[in-house]
Length: 208
Ligand code: GRF
Image: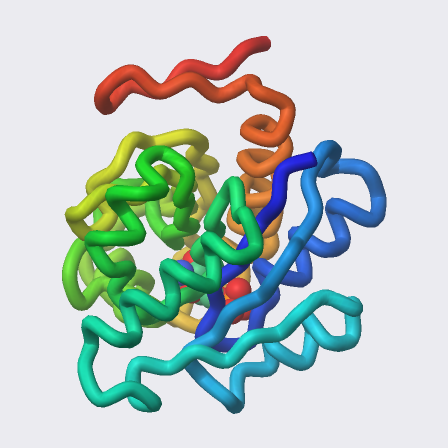
């Protein structure tokens, strides 16, 4: 059974999609051991409590130095013997010590088709504003492993979503969540939990 830590900063609809998928069998061989947030007001923490899993508040602001926070985060993952770290709308930079120890065991959901509309500063609604400003007809979402760069790690799954003429960033964001993010994030976790994902450098292969 793969032990998951889900790291969140906001509403937690992707966390909800993971919980629902575990309940209805779309994800097998995995359980959520802890939900960690940097934000005390994150509704994701309430979702975790309602679901009956540990909700842990760990904010860089509560520590004197960033190093202390980094150590605490790593310790929290170690103590719970976490196998896979899932970033589901986590707005804190994952420390290098965690990335090193959890190589190819941290995944992130990004709301565009990487390498479009990603990188530093490209998060939340900004992603969709940029996509609309560029006039793309298709956007989507990507699940990727996390390396030391921003949105640069090996790509696991992508799903395209059509852009409509009168889309606002908010409308496009919602469509991408519903049609892509809530589908491919649980799917990627299930594939990893069942040993079907293999990484070789930047290339990911998935067993049929
Ligand atoms: C999602 O759009 C995700 O792609 C991005 O942050 C947002 C999180 O939403 N990384 P939620 O907290 O899962 O509702």
